[in-house]
Length: 220
Image (cartoon, rainbow, N blue to C red):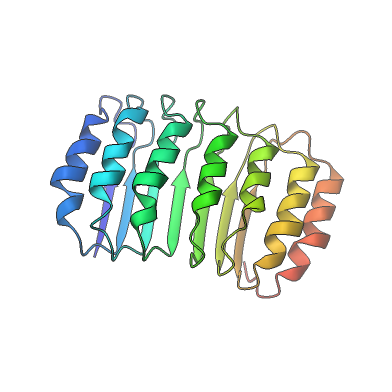
C-alpha cells in the first residue's frame, strides 16, 4: 500500500498541517509500504513541526520500504529540520530500502545537513536520491562528508543533484575514489553538477578513471 500527497506551491499551507498529518494520519497507517510527500514551495514551513512529523508519524511505519520527501523552496528550514527528520523519524524506519530527499533552493541549509544524512544512511539501502540543487551554503565539503561516512554498499540506484557553484575537482575526486568505487551493485547513476564553475577537466578525469570504470554493472 502507498500514500502519495502533493501540495506543490500551496503557499498558504503552514507546518501545522504536518502535526495533523502525523497524529491523525500516519499513526493509523502502519501497513504503508511507500510514502511520497511533496511540499515544494510551502514557504511557511519551519523547523518547528518537523520533529512532530518525524517522532509521531514515523515510529508505527515499520513496514515502510520507500520514503520520498520534497521540501524544495522551503526557505525557512535549517539544518535543524534535517537533524530532527533523521533523529526522530528516519532512524525508526527499519525496513527502508529506498530514500529520496529533495531540499533544492533552500537557503537555510548548510553542509551540516549532509553530515547528518551521511551519518544516518542505512547499510541496506538500495536506492538513494539526494537533491541540494542551488543551495548557496552547500559546498564541496558537504559532498566530501557524504562520501567520507560511506555510501550504502548495496545501492543499485544513485541520484545526486548538487547543481551549484561551490563544488570543486577535489570533491568530485573524493566521490569517485572513496564513494563510487565501493558501489559494486550499482546499475543506475545520475549525477548533476551543472553550474559548478570551479570544476575543470581534472574533475571529469577523476570521475572517469577513479570511479566510473569500477561500475561494471552500470546500465543507465
